Amino acid sequence: MAKNKVKIPVNIPELLTLCDRVLEKHVADGPDSKLHALVDFSWNSLAPDVPACRQEHEDGVRLRRESQRLIADRNRKVKVLREALRATRDFLEGVYRSHPRHLGEWGFEVTKSSPSKSKAKE
Image (cartoon, rainbow, N blue to C red; front, side, top):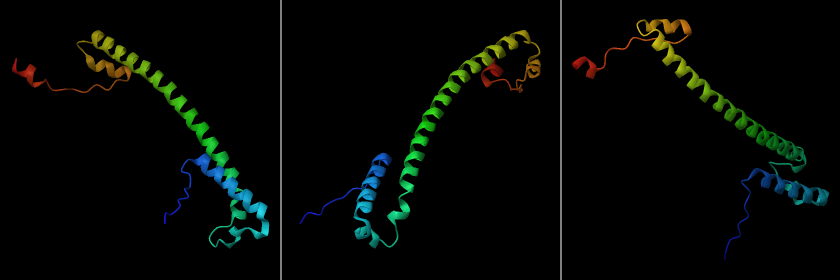
């Protein structure tokens, strides 16, 4: 004999819709509701959590979209700023070709590097 499967939705809005349906039936049945027999859960106590959870989910989705938009805006600006810094560094390296440590006056971190092995052999 085949066993029936009754799935609980993974998708949050679908899960909350199912909660609404269960609550609706539970309230409609009143004192005769079979769910009063549940030991670990009370649908009467859980009832306020369903709309609260729905609102929190909607707020979270809205905030996620807003966050993604803000991060995309930031990334576009950072790309331009990074290129401006590279151009500035390259320009100042030309200006201070003999004294690159002066780039430190502009906020750049200047570190000494040892000559590469290929240059050392030449």
